[in-house]
Length: 259
Image (cartoon, rainbow, N blue to C red; front, side, top):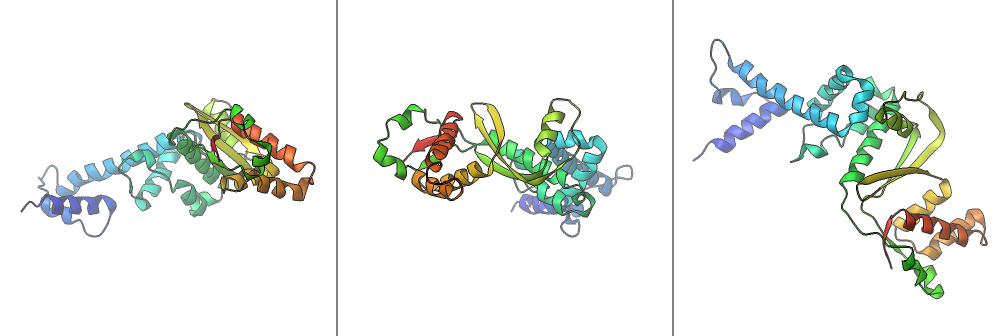
């Protein structure tokens, strides 16, 4: 029977730091290149490849920290977060949480929010394609049916709530401009991100639109969204405001079906 699965398992355990290095019994060393040195080549290579994956998935955070500091961050992260993915494209999904909780980095919470922002941008870019509806699709809806309208959303749509000016820092660094001073908002800002064709877009959301969008994505009808807004705006202002939100969502390509 082949011992390959056993050897592969021992090698994986070595790379992931799980217990004694049982792989050593499968490796031949020499006086010039002992077993530990041979294994370290692969161990260091594994860490380096994952740090490179982090750099690719978080290019602005990497650029902001600089090569040395980002490699130090990557080394610590990789040691506690082995990759569970077949593709390193998805490695780093826990980096924002790591930065928020690790004492060495949690004192600068903007770093965690920048990582959260970059990960959202990655998800937006990688999301499935879908054909958005045109504004003309709403023109054919009978007035009596408007209250029951519900909507299906583009797979790329993401929302992120941020307390710090991470998007502004991201934009400046990505354009090789001087980043603004780190600033904390009086209240967390809701951000909307989405993709049209191969272009990624984002904008901030006011509280009313954020609440309406959340309700609509949860399956609430247009009539229910109007009821939600009327508590703040009044019965007269709620329907045209909701209609304005809906028009903007359609024009941005966020909605792919109306039911």
